[in-house]
Length: 366
Image (cartoon, rainbow, N blue to C red; front, side, top):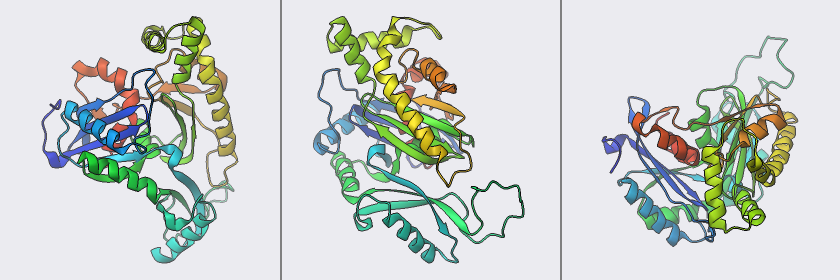
């Protein structure tokens, strides 16, 4: 059963479908503040063959039912997130128009030039970074040359293939869970980890097999990238170098992550190179892309927020901070959620893997 009671109409569920497991979080809207009701997750054992929930919808649906049942999540509406690798995202600039119809037409003209498939085969959503209605021209001569023009409006366009959305609908239909909305992982992480912070940050979500990067400025994800590397490479490295099984290596990795002292040096850091080096390469490439983007006001990332199931790895935050000369913080998805203090230590341990699910559940509360 849930950790707290509460009216069903005020309860919101975020469900994160991933290849390494399913995570679900239920929050209560308590006078505009999120309160944790319950949570649950599945986790694949080391050595198991991971699968995409969208490739095997029946198995994914059965697993989703099991997670919800064990967590005590009742028949309430849920919000899911599309995997970052399958989401098209672009920031464009279009002339301001007098009405929404002409503005939408102008957006579609630009998007057709950028999308990887015909626009008719996609579902897209536009988020206005600047107010779209006509505004008086700015009189401030000191305004940066790359700042938004009074004659144009910046728009964040996200989208995915209709066939991808259909697969999501199939999984939730089989699980008999009503899908209220489909969001993006980037926006979910912004809600749970960034909140109202208007600075320029990089959210680094390190999972078991996938690592996602989002550069966020004033709450808008200007740049999103995904790479096929995660904590699993560290497990394989430990198993290979020490001649132990994958299960033993996974346990050793977990023990190192929970026992390593902050700032300590040791042999455990050597195992991280196979993970940290490709991540550093991708981060530097993302920083370069972001600095050259024409529609951003800030050109430099101020800090990194680390999250994901593999963010607990020992010294990963220290190694990234030293290599990039930036402050690196482990994100706390419970920072904007009321949680029972008696469970704080447990929640701190599982929090990183639940960051997306928490942000999805917060969608209708923010």
